[in-house]
Amino acid sequence: MKKDFIKAILAGIMIGVGAVIYLSLENKVIGALLFSVGLLSICCLGLNLFTGKIGYVVENKQFGTVGIIWCGNFVGTFLAGTLIKFTRVFEKIYPSLESAMAPRLSDNYLSLFVLAIFCGLLMYTAVEIYKTSKSVYGMGAILLCVSVFILSGYEHSIANMAYFTLYGWSLDLFIKLIISFFEN
Figure 1 (tube, rainbow, N blue to C red):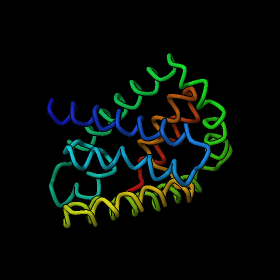
Figure 2 (figure 1 turned 45 degrees about the horizontal axis):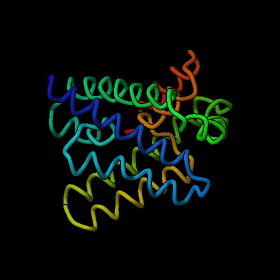
Figure 3 (figure 1 turned 60 degrees about the vertical axis):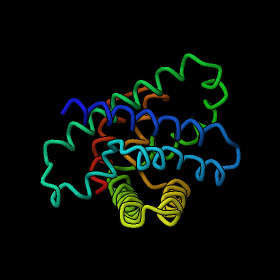
Figure 4 (figure 1 turned 45 degrees about the vertical axis):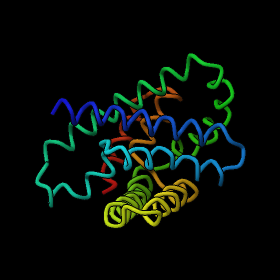
């Protein structure tokens, strides 16, 4: 359990890194591609990301573990986002963060839920191809699926943890996070 939690914290930090990369670049296509460094690192290092594990919860009979992973991902993204707020990078990314948050703030719950499901399908596809191929094809699937979810505006619960921490939490954002929890 402790090892799973630590691996989940590290995965959350890597998603936080991906979010900052995305927000740092004006070219959103390149930013979306580079966001993939988060999931690539997680898969290559064997870290625990909720969105990479939830699709296998029934098959692996690890119902309790995914809750621990989700909490660890929250801690990791919270740490990454909070620490970034103390750096010069935060000032650079804030305008892009406001732009990224605008649709999330104004969207309704049903829309967020549907967008989270589409993200979950892409994340499951990316991880499954990576797991079955363990080759350049798997890495390519991660690059493409992550880029597609970002550029399509789909909702990724763990990425949202990073964005919401950087932006500033509210009750509405917490509810929206719980809705995006059901992406898989």
